[in-house]
Amino acid sequence: MEYKISEVVKVTDVPKSTILYYIKQGLLPEAKKIKSNVHRYSDEHIELIKYIKYMQHEMQASIEQIRHILAKRDQSFSSSAAMLTPLMETLSGLEHDETYYSKEELLSMVTLDQTLIEQLIEDKVLLPTDPNGFTDKDLSVIRLIEKFNSVDVEYSILKEYASHASALAELEGSVVKSLCAKRDEENFSTLWQITFEMLLNIKPYIFNRNTHEVFKEKLKGEILQSR
Image (cartoon, rainbow, N blue to C red; front, side):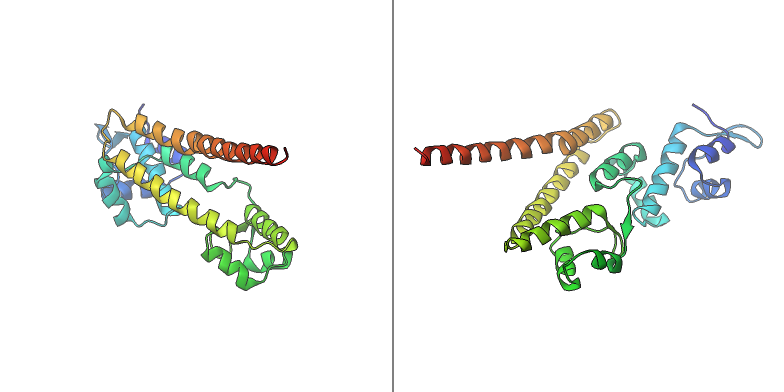
C-alpha cells in the first residue's frame, strides 16, 4: 500500500520533519518519487517508523544505535515493531492503565522497610519499571512477603525462585539468538511465531504441568504414609 507523507504522519504520529530526518540519517529508505515534489511511502516506512519510536522511547536507543541494529536487521529479531512491541508488552506483565507509585508512596503502604525493599530489587524478586515506578504487581509481591513474615517464614524461597527465573530468561535469550541465526526473509514470520508460542503458551504449559506432577506425587506420598 502507498501513502502520502500526510497519511504517514497521521498513522505514526511522527512529524514530517522527523520522518525526513530519519530518511536523511539512513534509518528509512527513500520514498518512491512519482513526479517532482510528489512522493509515496510504503508499509515498510510505517513499520520502521513505529520501530524507531519504540526503540527511542522504550529502550532509550540513540539514532546511531538504531542505525547499527537496522544495518544488521537480518541477524536480529528487534527490527519489527509489529512483532516486537506486543511481545515485550505481554512479557512486561503491565497493563496500559497501570497505577504507578513512587518508592515513598510504596513504603507508606507496606510494613517492609526501605532496606528490605532495596534488597528485594537487588535479588530480582521485585522488578519495578524504574526506581520510582512501582505498580500494583510489585505491591502484591510485597504483600506476599508480609504474609511470609506473619507466619515466620523466610522469603529466601522467593529469592531462589527469582534466581531460577533469571537463569531461564538467559536460556530463552540464547534460544532467540539461535533462532536469529536462522533468519531470512522467508522464515522471519515463522521464527517470530515460534518465539511467541514458546514464551507465551508452551512455557506456562511446561511449568504448570510439571508443578502439577510434583504436587500429585506429594499427594500420593501423603496417601501412602496414611495407610
